[in-house]
Length: 324
Image 1: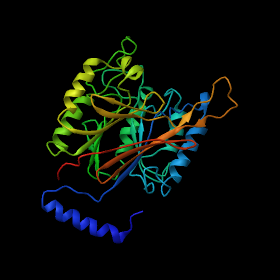
Image 2 (image 1 turned 180 degrees about the vertical axis):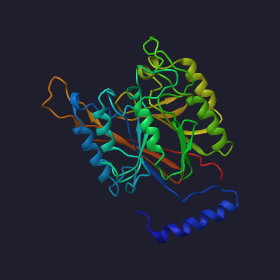
Image 3 (image 1 turned 90 degrees about the horizontal axis):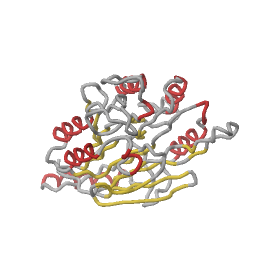
Image 4 (image 1 turned 90 degrees about the vertical axis):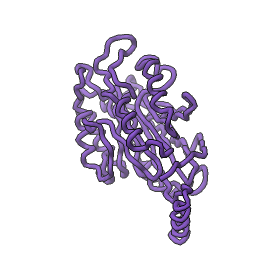
């Protein structure tokens, strides 16, 4: 780990080099990513999710597979489908005991940054209405001490961690409700997420070249794309992202780990925290599954997939940090 004596000279160098127009940073960033806890107490329990949370809590200070140790995370991204069945409010209450926007208020000892997924929506609603889960997430966000930049509903938002600019677009980055499985679905409403993304990047990133990380729930390939949003949406998204230094795209929805590219961007799909038990075998507990650790060290952006048995896939690349 870096000690105080070695960090201070680096900070001085960074300030001096910044005066010469050269962008350096001594501020490393670590955060965790999970998705689809999809709490459904009577159907498959939460034993696997609880085990995964305990692993997350104990991970800082342990060896990282790409060198050094895992730092305390700035937060944990939860990429949607917070609950499975919103009609059973006990599921939401159980979720709230696991994750909270404030560190130390839930079983997860780090602050949770929550994305809305399709299971968090109310299928009886449409025309811009929010489910009670969406409303509660909006209310929970008001308790955050960090500086977040919100849309007019305090639903979509962005923030900065060191040189990184992160943007949460919730269900999917488009502006209109889309059919699901070719059937009308007014509840599948992105609440003008694409417009928010366009406005946010223009205002917060502009021509700085700062690295951007964007996140939402649905995927960009296969089933995660074909049944939930449209090719026109993807074309519009591509056009909005094109002027910017997009370092990473993150999503969930399929409960599995994957790394792939879309339009030349690196995309990571986060696994769910648990493998659900078979509803036909209710005496068996669900089992833990996995999560991601994302780390920025200098100009090296790294992702490591942590499974129940330990570290699995790793990835890294050099990114451009832009200018102040």
